Image (cartoon, rainbow, N blue to C red):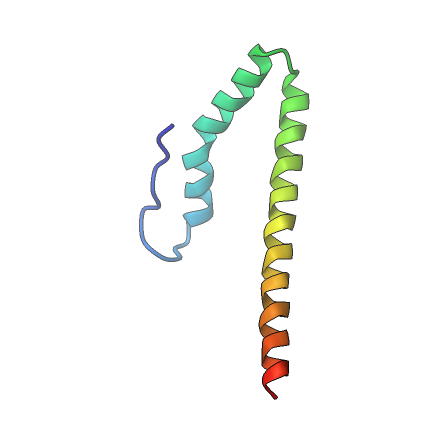
Length: 78
């Protein structure tokens, strides 16, 4: 699956909307493939939301752990 790159490097006003448009076709394909496999569209969409939420939480937890590790190392240096 080919995903369009952002229109510009760094932040710009429509970046979030552009990202949504860039992933939309792939997401629709995923929903279709899962539906063809026997899952209801509602099940698939709910699962996608759960996976996205769990992924965001994992990324956040990793970031917090990284900060805690750096702080711990700084505290040991004192």
